[in-house]
Image (tube, rainbow, N blue to C red; front, side, top):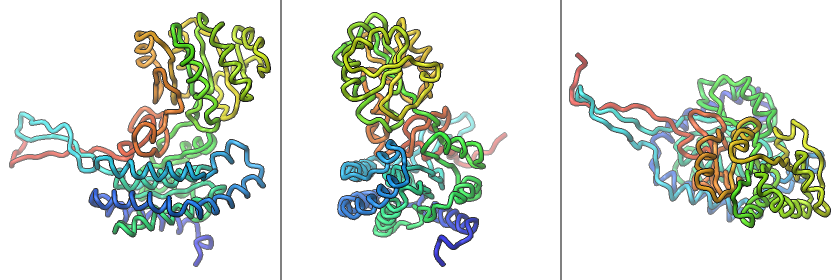
Length: 428
């Protein structure tokens, strides 16, 4: 019987049972087998780049016809560059050490026993994501490397792309003598599957939603299993006094305009008053040329309105909280690093924030006091990414404070259990 005809509860339970069975096999899979699967997947991605783009074109055509917002359509694209990045991510993961089974912190106790911790897979994770089909490969590759099994539910807008990618993943698993059910893609676009998937603690150990705020809020509210999440990507760049103005212009430009749709794109620019008169006209001219609307406080507005062609409007209170995912940025002048930190902690989403400065003490204070998953000095917020961090790939960005924080790579998909080694000791 076709998957689409099956009862949703039975279908989802079957996915869960198969994942749980596969997870038991993945836990003991040798590192060589997992790495072979990843390298094979990289080869398959490159060899199938053209067919993948044909499937992706079907999704893009349907998305445009349905009136999907431009940022969402942009995220949906499976370009040759995106495919190559996925392949490189698989190879990067394959080259990394296998941390499963690693024992850390082994210490002798007065009783004679030795106590440490062993790194183990989480088991089964469910991934619910929108738009970006490359997430299928990122999630699958990380799941394989970390010895887990996963159930992937992509958005209906990317169903053809996701099916084609998932098929390549299962081919790579089979070619490496690993269970093909270690990575399963939900084959139906029925949203009822999501409701079932997030309420199956007997099969699913953690849920990872990756998409819009509405999706993540719903998953967090209704899930009966732990959730790794972030709601917004309201990232900040603070231009400090003193700073290298040429560098600050280059970084502030890249952080905002290199791509508008990712959650690590800068949405708010804070500028120290002492450098504003020189810095703002330079960055304002660049933003104006690229069609970026600047929503500024009164002090910044007074400077920016002198920039030819600048699109400006007064910032409202809500603008300081906003994740635009569009060519819009909020701009505010601050007295210095103290006010910048206070603003970021009050209005930011605890995702990624950067300081551009020549002052080492200011940099250290920013690193210590900004309460975000990633904090940067003299670098673009666009680097907040598992691939750029050397994690091979990421399953998402977590703004939670426990288990996983920031880009979630291999370690974020593992847990630690205590191991005790003795020689017949008994407790007195």
